Figure 1 (cartoon, rainbow, N blue to C red):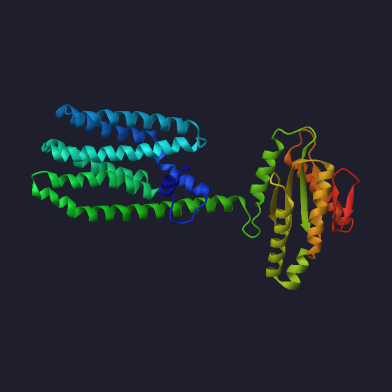
Figure 2 (figure 1 turned 180 degrees about the horizontal axis):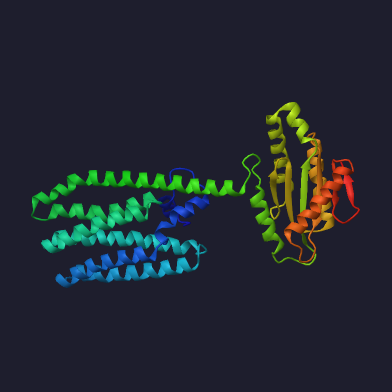
Length: 368
């Protein structure tokens, strides 16, 4: 995202959107070298044709400037795509400014075609400008303010040029301008809203694929995938992965006596406690029913015990009892084996009287 205030305003939406979604919307101008290359060919074809047919300083200057702009834009796009989203804001700002400079030169070049009196140049220049505006609308629909400014820079000089040439009927362009520009803005706005809805639906779909809608924690698929990744991530010798199997005690009794709404509130409260208890590097998820799984990275036995006590204390203060089974990863241990040991530790905790925790393969345990 650009840091410069005006450019940032041009590429943001009037609706409040999170930074990741804004980055996706901004990706349009930096997404396809193919479409930009075709646009460059069209623009260069017009500017070079004008310079060849009318080798005046104005048209030669347009040809040179247009060529330099497109070489720079294509090189910048190549660099930005190579950096895969890690490009510094300055590169994006320069690329966006060059996009505005290009449309300004296109507008002035088209105006020069109108003023030349050459019918061939007038037809080529005007039709090319209108075609490029259509491409701008589609390519930059994610950033409608920026796209509309590009259209203004392309269209207004051409319209104003009709005031200074002898054919009076061409002044109809001036009457047509408000209709043309209004239609373009309405189209941009509609395309942008459709794109935003599609992206938000995609984000929502991805979230629901890995998260539990009731508690906001990861669901079974999400937390198990994170566990797999954590097990094979390089880490220090002193730190291991620990998994916590957490089960609400007497949850069925709450559902039976107080109803499912009370049970849902209890699950949500447990989810909030787990979220508040873990570090940023840890993960909490709901496996289903009243079972939760917590993945602690770079864990030690003492750290695992402290976390279990913290969870138990917070839940007890809310009048909730849980049992916890903990297993710390052994060398080269896979997730099914690790989970089975944590599950066995949970079972042992339940047999010992519930409301406590136990570490797998040790005698260490605690009760709340």
